[in-house]
Image 1 (cartoon, rainbow, N blue to C red):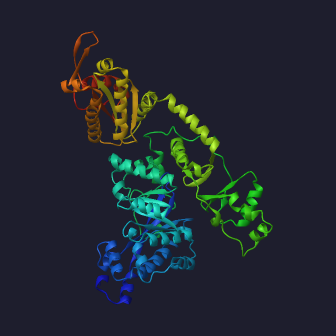
Image 2: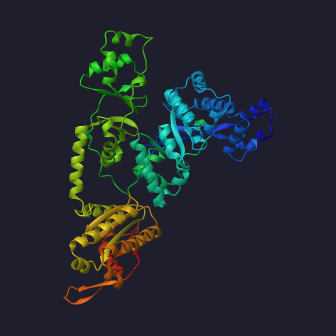
Image 3: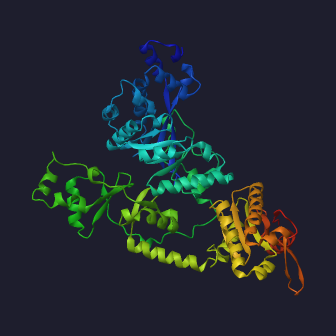
Length: 583
């Protein structure tokens, strides 16, 4: 019998009891260690519904959404409670419309958890954009209530609705879950990769962790790793299971994939000598413990706070508890059992980065939010590692600027030959296809001689800006020197590379026309001396390109020979010329 045809509430609730929950692991992108499981309803088809949203739409219409959700919530919590993995979290999907139910009441979740002896910080409620923005004040109130009670908040299916950024701002979420739409074939779609990379950067600056949903193949995994996604979920790791005995504390295929990724190495790692270890306090410590900490470490002006799994929770500043700790009765009050409180009252959010993100992203995050802190905390695989103070950050910045200055073109500020050589060397070691592109201006010397070197520099800068604007930022865009440029692509098909390069050539030819006078534009050429001193006509500036595909069968010894031939041949073509290096 279908719920949709039922009128009697008791019969409906009996059918709801037949539903079950499957759990799907959410794991660390680098280590494969399980972080959480997501609860997914199973058996709704037997109740006459094609999808889960259909089920909840019907419950909403009957004003039974909150009553049924509490039943389902308890069922999920009870099953979760039998998974014997330390410090595991449960992600539970929350239908925002239950706030509009006449019987909605705050505090019921905490009562269920108390009955089952589950901590609030073990639960993360997933909210979506569906129906969320109907009443912003109510949404804001309930989200703040959940967070104040110790629950975590995740925004599910992020990017699929039109109000995602507003929801992100209002919710101050702990997690963003990137929808499967953006993860599917992300390794083959440069626009998806650019979108997700931008979201990850924004989230990390805001102190939010990112989860990729629906990872199904190795290529998707590698791209998610490259753009610093924190956690992953999908069939590549494990399918949802009704049998909790199948859930493991670690999924070895993930660290093996990470270890075997030889596509590129990170030469931008943070030197561990810049990271200072500051002894943390556990979240379950008392106010008395906090007072004793600052007496034991009198030079410390703050203390990092970690949970049972060594994850960084936040920071407590001595100044925030100074008035109480130095009062006449402060220590006595802190020792009094009736007065003792958890540290959560005094915890502030902390600016932190994963050590694997490297120097550039660390400095970028601190520059955006550094005025809020005395430095930046460092974690490794989501566990507290240490702290980089402002002086060390300045030293890192100075050192990095020197490195960049030594390896970039002075005019365009693009990477130079060292990075190009490294990219090419790494390409021959990789298991996946790589494409390298050489650009060379056509008739640049006559233009430079005729209009002067300042206009020549403007033409070079126009092309440089076009490359940086039009191409994925994960590509290596470099300046060989003069009017020669280089671009390196990973994880793209030849067709995608060809289309992007062809578009660049067209855009440049149109853009650079602004450097000519009206007469030359009307003629379609300039008249000036060639290298032999003879006056002749030269076409307006354009750029030729040579695309070389490097794959598993390529031999680096053939590169120079093929490059010379293809660059010369490309000069005779309006469109990109491509070739694959073979043995």
